[in-house]
Image 1 (cartoon, rainbow, N blue to C red):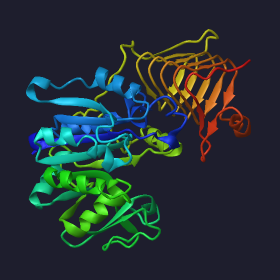
Image 2: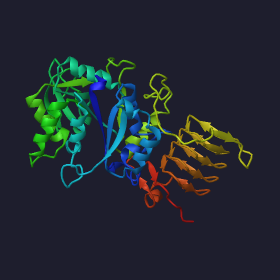
Image 3: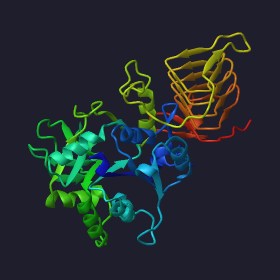
Image 4: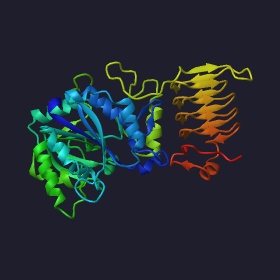
Length: 407
C-alpha cells in the first residue's frame, strides 16, 4: 500500500507555547535529545514504514526547517518517484495563508490529485513518537474504511485537550468530540478516554471531495478536528486504529509525547536520561535519522585548576568539551564547551553554547549561540531569572538564542 500512498506532514504551526524556542524557528525544527530535530521522529517513522512520497507543508519561520530537510533528508531518488519535498504556503486557492489543518491540504489539492495516490496519510510534524504507519495503512484497507484515525488512551481529565473518539465493538467511530468539557470515557475503562493523535488515513477521492465541500462552508474553521472529522463520522465509515498495538512489521508502536509546552518539551528530553528510557534512541532496527554537523568526538579533560571533569547520566553530542566542569543529568548538543568548575544540572544546552568557569546552571534550557559568563548562576533564584528570561510553570528557565549578558 505504501506505493499507493501520498504523505502530508503538517509542519507550519507557530508553536507559540514553546516560545522563545520558536522565536526564530518553527516548532518541528526545535532541537531535541542533543542531536535531533522534532520533525526527525515523524520522518524516521515514514522512512521505516516504507513511505517514499512525502510533502512537508511549511509556513511559519521555515528557513531552519527547510535547511534541515535539505541537509539531512535529501535521501530519496526523484528519478524513482521518491521525494521529501517542503511545500511553502503559496496561496494556491485564494489570498490567505493556511487557515487550518484541512485548509493546508486543500490549498495543495493540485499536488494530491496529481499524485494519483489511492490513499492519503496526514501526519503532524511536531510530536515525539515511534510508529509503523504501514500497520495503520493495512488496517485501513482491511477494514474497508473511508477514514482511519490513530487513537490512544489517556486519563479522562487529560482528554479535554484532545479530540475524543467514541467507538463501538468493531472500532468504528460513532462520535467525534473536539476538546469536550466532559469527555466520553472508553467503554471498557471509565477512567480513560480514547483520543485522536492527529494522524489520519483518507481514501484520496473522498478526501478531495470533502475538502472542496468544506471550502464552500463560510462557517467552517477548515480544521480536521473541528469540522471535517465530526461530519465524516456521521456519513462515512471512520475507523479507529489503536496506537500501542503489536501490528508493526518491524516494531510495535511505542511512546508518544506532545511536546507543545516548555514543560512537556523539557520532560520529554529528561525522559531520555531514565535508566530504561521510554523512547530507546539506541534501537538498532529503528535508528532515528537526522543531520548532524561534522564535529569531533565529545571528550572530557582536566581543567586549568587541575580538577577532573565529571559527567554523570548525561547525553553528549559531537564536539562537546568538558574542561574540568561537572555535568549531571543533562543533555548537551554539538560544540558545547563547559569550562573549569562550572556545574550543569538537569539542563538542556543547544549547540554552540559556552559555559564560563564557575558558572552554575540548574533546570535550564539554553538556546544556541549563548556564552554564559564565568560565575553566572541561572536556575537558583527564579525571581531574578524572571526579570531576564522566560520561566515555565514548573520553574524551567529558558535562555533565548543569542542572548548577550550585560556585565
